[in-house]
Image (cartoon, rainbow, N blue to C red; front, side):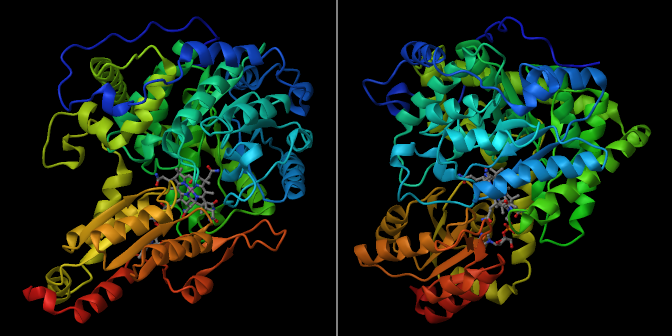
Length: 614
Ligand code: B12
């Protein structure tokens, strides 16, 4: 039986919880601007746009005779059919169109069906079209105009999920309009709204206003269109308590469904590497159903290198996801991520291989059911729900006490984005106070992502001898640490290692602009700059940083790790190439492993023995 309810009236507003303790939140510090836009103006403006922008015809809707993907998902759930989701997004639109056709065709010939494609637009698509020229580009697909959007979705009858760099970006309204006209009925990504930043774009008021307006345009469509949110792209990847992640589901439903009136479908999975937690989270969603889920993303943090051993992870998470959908369908398609994803964007034949592999896993999954302790997963799911409801109520009550209007979607979204996951969890997390634990609370359901990084840091520094550790600590070094984009795990790992070694950290944050890093180094006097970068912009970033350091007249050695690649400017290739040699030529030290840090710290310690006695 399906757990997806038919569309219905909005749920009752959550009750205000009395006596929320903790930190002093204050409207004046969170939203100091005197004249912010009001949701009461943005929502009618977005709705009015629906008179000229409506869901267009698509090969998918026509072939299956459905009005929207939600109807298709409900039918698949009722039929007990497990759906497949594949990601597509090559820089070259012609290659992306070919992928759209070839993956569908090859999987059909293998006896299966790819139900939906998630389109990886390039992050530069998040800038308004009029301001896109000259902005930094990542590794994804760039669609120049409406015709390019429509040409893509016409290639085969597969649901078009415009999941990234649409909602939540400065270009939210125009990209949503283009996606709708191309026949898409699942558009995101609200998760990105909370955490992603476009380099050089600081206007979060405009981004929030565009996001609210775009969701209102979706709400006013004549057919059901899902607002999509990937929780792992949002705060979920950074919460230490999975109850807060479930709370994020409830808070987002309140904003999108109750305040704006659009249906909201969630995705989770990238960072859910523990099979039991993965199953429990899906069970929690099934127990508190909303609109159909979009997809369960592959547990990509389990992949390591490009070796075939990644098939073990692929098989393990697909089995859990297939079984979970068989037992309690929530509308989520499952997502076989090619094993090469850890190294680069997978090629077309690799996406086909992963999907054909998934067909077999799906067929075999029901045999696993007797081995699984569903009752245990359900107990954890109940804890996630109770803790999540408490988190939602405490956040809303706390923000109302701070003087925010929690019935205004604009104000609520902007406040939550500005406050960020750490402060929200510290102040309103549902766990009991525990000053010695991260975020000062005992998590209701501990997330594995952050604690695994702490364990990894501990293990890595154990490789140093006691005298090496003492030499580093005695040198009283200072490292300026930053991430160039949303990927924060590399930075967290390096930060944990530095702290354990007694090195002072100047934290320049995530999405750190080169000017800001240079400023930190100038003010704080760093001995070393440590950069973690993943979005395929390593070389451009280093060149801009070198220029920024020169302009303030400081110098410090630069270590750079993460995904050190970039799509070359003078090529029409869709795949990024390694730029480690170019980074070294530009004066940085490329670090493929976290341990590479040690040699540089020891070198600095040796050069500055006088600090020990200073
Ligand atoms: C987790 C993850 C995410 C999470 C990030 C969560 C978070 N808040 O941190 C989420 C889901 C949010 C995400 C989003 C995206 N991601 Co992502 N993500 C990953 C993933 C799976 C793991 C990266 C990671 O954190 N690893 C953990 C770290 C600790 O380990 P590591 O990477 O092996 O790092 C080692 C070394 O490099 C070194 N190191 C790292 N940093 C540093 C720094 C220093 C100074 C030193 C010394 C060493 C060092 O130490 C580590 C241990 O030895 C990778 C794929 C993969 N398996 O690697 C893709 C990947 C990095 N993502 C990718 C992409 C494209 C994206 C998106 C653009 C996708 C999209 N369309 O939305 C967005 C980003 C958008 C944006 N605006 O920034 C691409 C990058 C493509 C490329 N450059 O070729 C990858 C490679 C996946 C792929 N093949 O397509 N992602």
